[in-house]
Image (cartoon, rainbow, N blue to C red; front, top):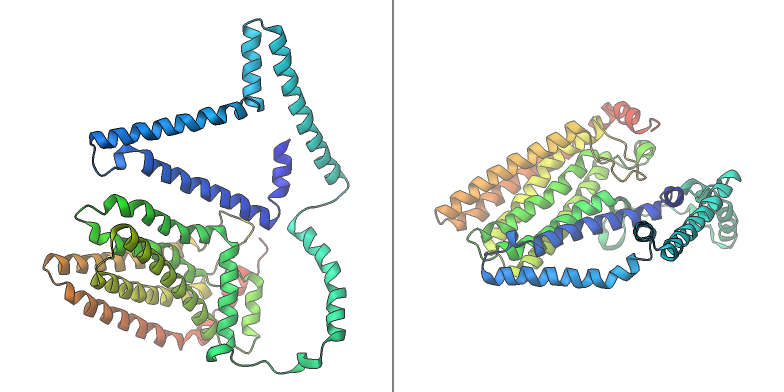
Length: 403
């Protein structure tokens, strides 16, 4: 009976976001508890660690004892208590527990009846219904605003915004930020690297391989960001047709989308650097600079492939499906292959330079790598307009089909 209402609640976008956030929070909490309370993940298996484990167990038992009276008043515990009372021939207790379960059943039945009454009357609580009700109010407000406004609507749009940034970039960055904020899967992929750094940083800080913490965290961050460029038009769906009607170049659209991915990676890396510096000490500046140069070059080469794959093999993304994949299987394979090859090559270069005490060579090597990849990326932007025109049929066929 309760799930009949839960299904309707999840029909709205805000409820889905809250529910998915609770699931992600629970998942992250389970992983934190595993790494915190499990002695196997401690730095040493000493008597001190054994004592800490007993403290954790005692803490969990104390919390359970405090919550136990609240759980006893819920239907599962009432049912078990009723069966135990019947087995012990305690007639009064049996009828008391059974009556409490019946009251819960009556409450659930009332909720279910309200739900069925709402459906029988033809009412809907989904996003579409709320959108219709809002559209009925908006025209009146729009007419009022139009009647009181000056004829500034006919003024030509400005070509640039504050600080000389082109308006198309500002518009696209704002739109991409809105897409990321509304898609919990992307948010989870961005939060997870930061969460894992918080867990693992203190665990591996005292070990000899702690120098690899920051480069590994940067590579794991790109694992969630690189696939975004392989389906740049997935959220626009049918709206992608307007890019070919608007007076903008496709290269500017994709450049703004790629720039947003670069900014996401930069923010993630800065946050990870701050966490590692606070928990384990500041990483070597040579290692940190080399890792950031590698990330810039890898994002550039990934965007080269991703821009073309976004046009030739797009995948429509529904924001109402929480488990929806961001790209097609082939695009995901290409993205992973590019990242693995780049990360493997970088790990080999890191190992050679660190093993032969040539850390000074890391920055020049990866600066050359980043310069070459960024140069190739800039050169590839020149052919995107013609490439989009040649493959617009594939783009529209996939994104405009009914899901």
